[in-house]
Amino acid sequence: MRCISIAALLPLALLGACDAKEHTGRAPGERAISLEPVVRLDDSGQPILALPERVSVDRSGRFVISDRSDKDVKVYGHDGRRMLTVGRGGHGPGEFAYLITAQPYGDSLLAYDVAMGRVSIFAADGRYVRSFTMPPPNPFWVRVVDDSLFLSIAALPGDTRGNLLRLFRPDGSTVSSFFNQSRYLGRDPQLLQNVGVIADGGRGVVFAAMGGVDSVWAFDYRGRRLGSAPVDPVRPLITTKDLLARNHGRLRRPDGTHVKHGNRTVFEIVALDSGSVAMQVAPYDAKRGIDPLDGGTLIVTALAGGGRMRTIARTEMVGGLLGRDRAGSALLLRYAGADGDRYEILRMRLQPATSEIRR
Image (tube, rainbow, N blue to C red; front, side, top):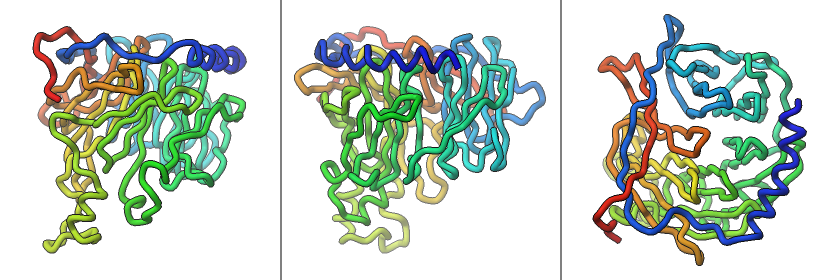
């Protein structure tokens, strides 16, 4: 495919840019977050979105949404009408046992099945093109970075060296492997079983966080650490490590509830433009998990140079942070009706604000 051969040249330029200058984010100062409605989705009588996982925009401006429950990818036009449904449940070519994510990739579409460790590539019209299998152990996510690289996000404890993130080219060759779990979490198996890694990258920076940990980290494409910061400096998160320590190392409280139940945690992260990252924080429900569309706290953090990061925006929201557009602005999805059978896409905007964020 032509997009692959062209894309293979881009990582070299991006890595060169990493060496040429220090990464910094937006200018100092607090920002106000506004959420602007973009479009309401219309499935035109077809099965509606059941469990949306990621929202992206392809080169033609179509909205691409992976649906874990229906095991397919739903594609919507500018007007919100369903144009295409890609893939289906199954184990054959172009089918999914457990579709975990999908995103545009050049002029094509990439979808990752975590159960089979298989990446499938589809043409813009939904035709199955080819697939390849990830080397074991299966990563939990595979994300597209800059239409030219793939980001593999491992389930703990990571690869044989304990690295949780790997950037690789379309031909499978590795650009970098980094974010070693032993450095950030140690080797306590009980702790490792109760945290999860999330990450996203773009424009030379990979951002990573962990559900059950209170920090966010930034790395360049070579895996060199650029900075770190608390996820929420206003309402600091309580880590799973602290929760276990408070409960004498036990996962269950005396009343039978899981030690993580009700605890606020970061569960979504989206790399933005200008060396910035958006994160969604919400309480964990040990009985039913987390529905991102229930909302929570939306936080934006930016690189500040010199190994520093700072929070520049924070607000409470209704809806789920599920992706970004081609310009690097965050996209959110929320219910458009009381019965939950319609969805609306929103775009996050950052505007100057007058007050300074509390630290």
